[in-house]
Length: 175
Image (tube, rainbow, N blue to C red; front, side):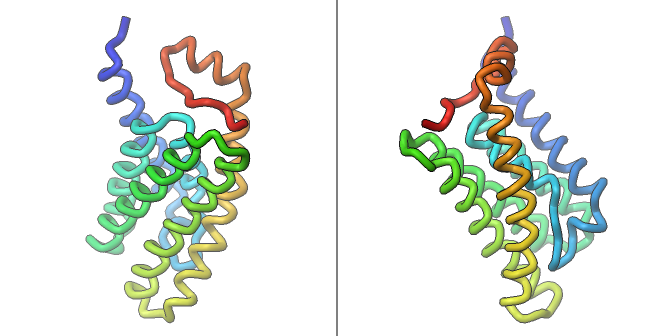
């Protein structure tokens, strides 16, 4: 039987790799003020997988943004944005309140928009409103639509039970 620590490290590495590859492969739409970072659709999975996803998506952003060419501010800012967004979503998503997953996903969109939109407007020397709108639109598509759909699919009992059979902890389904 595998230890919980080994599983956590493995999941963290898998989430980091999935995120980084998703961003780098789709680099033309991942590193502008108006962007749809498709890999951000993975962020709501922090609600289901907890710490491995929170740490993995943060590390994945650090790696991906290193290749983006926007410098240290993007490398640090993007990973901090993912860390704060996924941690908040995980904690909100654990609440036994109807609609907590929607609130959690909305929080991810808000955190990513404010942090990334702010520093990208600075880096691209554009008005703050442009940076915020550009990231908000892309985050709504990636996190709000694609990510929430992915979250719902993976939380279905048949899939959640299959994941549990592999030793993966999937947190409760929303009530």
